[in-house]
Length: 236
Image (tube, rainbow, N blue to C red; front, side, top):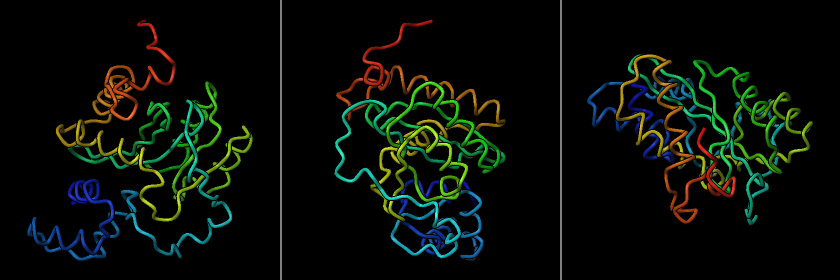
């Protein structure tokens, strides 16, 4: 069921749990109620993209920051990083993938896989990335991993400006969403990874190829490393 939810949401991120329930009932002929679909989406960390009140997260309101990227010209590497988490299915079970993407070059700066949604895997990945390079701005959604004091403190200590998507605004984080969609169609949906080890190996290989070899239309058909570093790094 979670596999189908992931497929439907990836293709149609604006469809809510009610629509997804109807699709599964109709196309898969599975009698399932809306509450179960909504519960599964929460476990998966999936949120429908459309403007709506978020009454369940008022606790985090004090940590929400404004969206800083509207009408901003992104002209250089490390000007803006985007961060986000997505659900990654396996043959049995699933994991979560956190990525940091440089918005100018489209380079995946760093990433981390986790079997749980504990915030430590996000913070550890960010600390590792920030030990090498620092952006001017980091943009995220308003999820619980980013609207908490540990995340805010980490970025403020490094004097990084914090930007967050407007609630439910699809275009605010479009570069990151596009990468997740590409990753799933290119790698996840056409394979059946049996173990976390196998998934990690495949993700590592995909990220390397994405950064160093694959041309990207939005950056003049160069690969992200060429734009991020100014030239391809020498092979080891």
